[in-house]
Length: 111
Image (cartoon, rainbow, N blue to C red; front, top):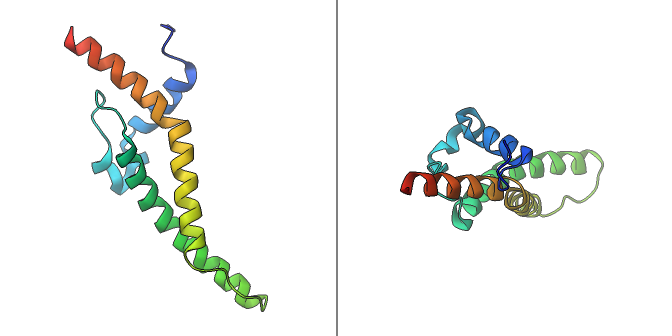
């Protein structure tokens, strides 16, 4: 079933990303299957997730620092770090798989 542009990892990543539950409240950001995941969309996803989870992490780190009588790191460090990590991981995994499939489906639909 491998046509040269399809791999088992591509199938795994696209199957994961196709599931509505994995998008949660960010489902409105998922493109059509024939539309590529562009940098702006991935950045929006990364910022929304990175800030949300990063702020939770910052709160937890501040509580730990307070309990240990240590200074807390700046509240923006963890959200910015999480945003960057999400962006890089998404660009390295889901985006190439999604975009290869989108291109393949778009070509098939145009024939």
